[in-house]
Length: 205
Image (cartoon, rainbow, N blue to C red; front, side):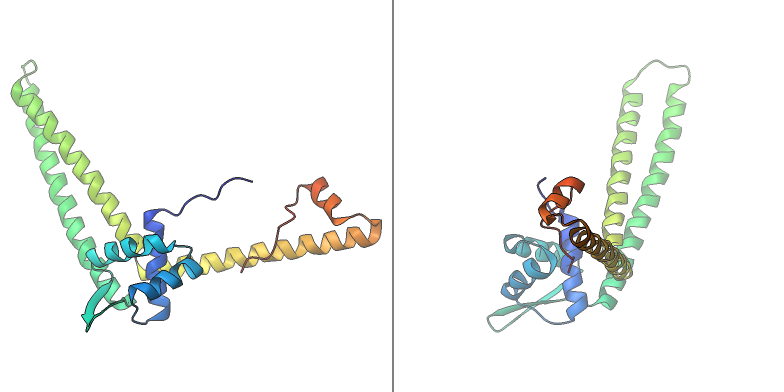
């Protein structure tokens, strides 16, 4: 049996936000360290870093009351935070593209009737840096799109549809196995081996 693939950093952030959005409560870190592994498959040791990254990005609020530190997040605020961030990133991308266009124009001018020059090399280097900056900003936008409450809600619906489909097929397989056992008096283990069915197959909760 193949090893289960680890959960990516972005997926951990998405699942952690789901906890806040679904429960709409205030949590201490130790509470999240108990809830996250059970409900979202985030190991307890990773919870602190995941929550801090969401706090740093303004997607989760935090405050200290007495000696306790509480964390919370609501979809409405996240939506506004995400929109501000997306607007900012979009503006930066537009500026980057304008600079890139200007630099490319300079490059064309520098190429006319000239061999490789220091100026041309500097222009090429500027183009390379601007392209990297644009790629970075596009990835940053994608990160905030993944944190969109509407996207999370759609993902939850799709996940439930997938679970229902899996359970229907699981039910069908169990029914067929039961029919074969009763009709042909075949051991369940033999059926599993013959048709490549995992003996530990069960319904998805």
